Length: 498
Image (cartoon, rainbow, N blue to C red; front, side, top):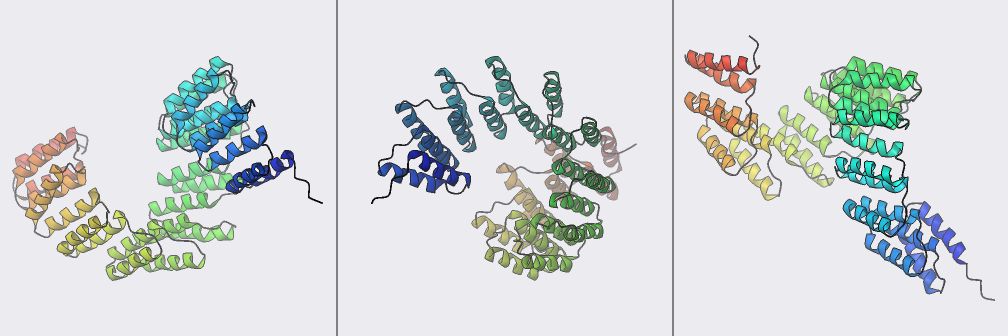
């Protein structure tokens, strides 16, 4: 007796279970093909599942071919099918095509819902088209679709990330007027916005406002504030924020502790950062590569490179894979403490582990070579890395120019500097300051003053160090009138107090 062929309903159940795992999209597609080969006709549900699979695999053309088949079979696609396609297009970065598809769907008399527009708004914000997202929010209100908190949150978050915090606050006020209640996502976005523009008081007042409105901050909300306070050097306040979140029953995670550690390292309290690092494991939080990188970088900055290398070994023991940041910090620390041969060994290890060095890593070697008066080797290294397809950055040339000037090879430095200008390289204030210092050491003060004017013509504004470099040299060589004139200019620019 032949076994009964399962019905389409049974097949749909199997396909649905495969899709729910979020891993077996290809298997589901293959199974549907086999199903059709046996003569079982797919239903609308089957084809909707296929569209979902193709979209998740980024095979948008195939997804739309299934939609065409749905329409050809006389089925009416539902909003979920349209939403799946819109989401697939947005996830593939084809947001403009998603908008065009939206227009086509509406033109054919189909209706979309809040999920459709929420997806389009999110897609626009992800590609930096926040204004277009805001315009879409305005347009849907005339189509009988009520904007929800998710749409507002998406645009508020995008505005805040663009540092347009005032606009985000206006949108927040609009939400309130329209009776849409802000949630923890709304407040977290605004708090982040205020933090990145340095308005920490306003950020903390928003945290207090959440409490009065019975909206519980989550770990992400607190992490934003701990990180911002740490980066401002307000480590005591960051630690207090950690205490507040624990008191409120919010468990700190690896990001919380890493942010606090980073804050301590920024104010050179590396031992306190190490205490936090050691406390993490005791509190059931496993350090990640970022945590180790913060500690390794902090230790290298205070020349405790051996301790930093011990942490690299610990990472290996804990099966945490070091990344470029890990190796770059250690290589920089080794180079700055004169252990250049060890740094080269670590560079080899980087390559073996599939972490090819970038220009930041090589800059550490260049700095060590130039400070060790091996400028020709530094020039050879720049040529070698360029041959590998790694482009030098402004810092690379600053290191080289400084090495040449301090090594009594100003003419070579000047030739390279002129070449950079001709090739249109973006030169920094530091680049001009190095060259101005080189000119002063050569006694070429008029040329140094000319270069000071030229850098402003190139849109590079001199800072206090640039002026001080020339002024000190002028005073030292008896050019008091010129020096005093520059001092008055510094005061006028607000670079020096009267």
